[in-house]
Image (tube, rainbow, N blue to C red; front, side):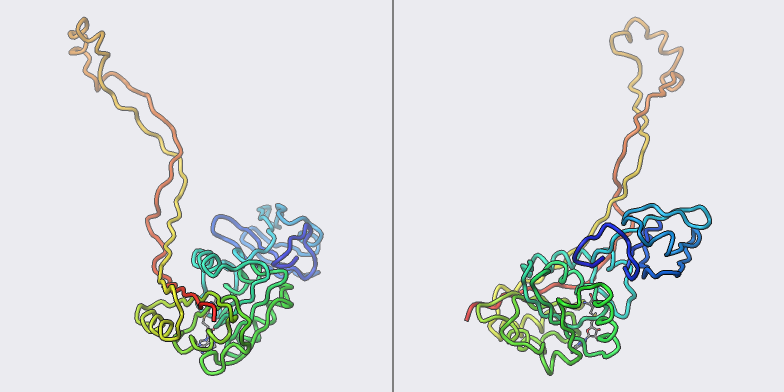
Length: 304
Ligand SMILES: C[S@@+](CC[C@H](N)C(=O)[O-])C[C@H]1O[C@@H](n2cnc3c(N)ncnc32)[C@H](O)[C@@H]1O
């Protein structure tokens, strides 16, 4: 298993994603002899996971069952241990496309936080790209290094434990794209520009507040970045459900109505049973929707 390559069989040391039900997934580190408790009973790693195929249905000790899935950045985002606020897949998808990331891209990122975005970047730029990620909180930086090793993507990433606003990304003239998710991104714009290739590249900054966006846009313009655009992405997830629609009763047929007007009076339409109904599947918009996460500001560094 690796987060950038698919394997068929679950092996000792893998991170497997246990799917317990709708909107209920959890990540498990597979270890010989270990057990994982679920609401369906115990999963015994040696017998239930190791050497089974990814995607298998595993019966737990209480007779209930779960599916065991191969890890992906999307599944990691919904199962990872939070050490900070994280980016979710809706924003990540837009960032990945608008930064024009592809295999071979060199990317600078700060802060690393919980590594949610980092995993998506790594999957996109593999097998030849590189991620330089900067996190000034020492424990967070150490923890994410450990996770990158466990997920077998550490050859694609360098984690630097420093302040990006003071010390920059630790590289100059190499990045195709820069991503910022820090409280004061305007203080890192100069370093971001220096980290990017001479022939230019793309930048994105994520900020929850519009005041942060204003200051960032000003700094971007002052530093000569172009095509400055801010956008927000909102997700609407629809539920699929069956409904039964009662067909309307328009009364007796118009052809027969003249001859049987007396009969119609005797038996009013309400009394004439109209059992006709239609069963269909429909989607309903959500009653509650995830709200504002942050503004995404994009810009281009022109060729110099
Ligand atoms: C919101 S989190 C980033 C979450 C990340 N994008 C993810 O998807 O998991 C922000 C991180 O930036 C770090 N940070 C804030 N200011 C920084 C700075 N000046 N230099 C380096 N890291 C910084 C914080 O310690 C925190 O871990």
